[in-house]
Amino acid sequence: MGVEICVEGLTKSFGHQVIWQDVSLTLPAGEVSVMLGPSGTGKSVFLKTLVGLLKPERGSVRVAGRDITRLREHDLYEVRKLFGVLFQDGALFGSMNLYDNIAFPLREHTRKSESEIRRIVLEKMDMVGLIGAEGKLPGEISGGMRKRAGLARALVLDPEIILFDEPDSGLDPVRVAYLNQLIVDLNAQIDATFLIVTHDIASARQVPDNIGLLFRRELVMFGPREDLLTSNEPVVRQFLNGRMQGPIGMAEEKDAAQVQQELAQIDERGPAEGLPPRLLPSPGITRPPRWEAIARREAGLRWEEVSGA
Ligand SMILES: Nc1ncnc2c1ncn2[C@@H]1O[C@H](COP(=O)(O)OP(=O)(O)OP(=O)(O)O)[C@@H](O)[C@H]1O
Image 1 (cartoon, protein in one colour):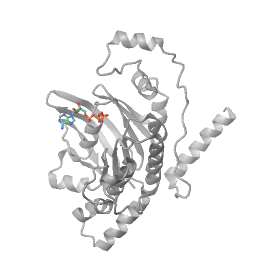
Image 2: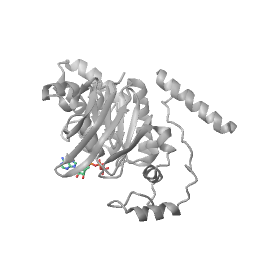
Image 3: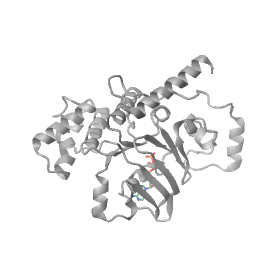
Image 4: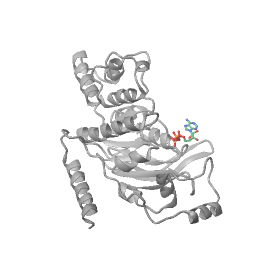
């Protein structure tokens, strides 16, 4: 079962540049959360702060009861073992084949025998659909496969928390759909806490339990998927609908009068598409109680739609 991450009053700056301030949220244990936000709002900085790679100026990040912003390097190293991170490009070593890339954390951080390592590596490669590609170099495979390999590597130490930095970047819509299904299947299988940074609204609509949005150096909202997708908050609406009209500008923020004028021109009759269905684990994957409950709730929602209730 994954662990909860509790963030309180977190502020991060580089020099005089405040990236975000006073961010507070709880990533519930075992749930999938997504963090959205326009480019440059500090989503990657947020992930790096959660895992202790960057130090915030203020606030706390409690993981399994310990505030990682105050840990010394040795203790931080121990807490980091709870995390698996999928970096944007998979962050694979170009000169190593996939097998050795995926085995790397086991050889670095454990004293397991090569036969035990082999069992684990093949198990994780199987989970991400890469069996047979053990001998390939990262440069010989597609971007989607590199992401899967990065994911298999993030899984080998059996993490309680997995952070995904734009898992869908550079992938075509079909690969994104497969990757989303893989993420949901993995969550059902390993029950870890997931946080996904993405720009892909379709993924954000279907995959998570919770959604957050960073904008103007603040966390605009964080809460259950349903609340964000039906929110009337102008920043949330603009981002989820991918519109030009609204508070989010091309490079910088717009002035208040322009935003008011633009919003007045939009037809605001409520969410056009309604609540999209949650993506459920694939057939054949045993659904733990959490996913059983989600599937029952989803079935109830669909029935309400059909019956007009
Ligand atoms: N190590 C660093 N030193 C100084 N500034 C940094 C550092 N890392 C990030 N930044 C700055 O922090 C801001 C936020 O960057 P970040 O990469 O987190 O944004 P993002 O929301 O993930 O963007 P994108 O969606 O485009 O990937 C940027 O202005 C970036 O230049």
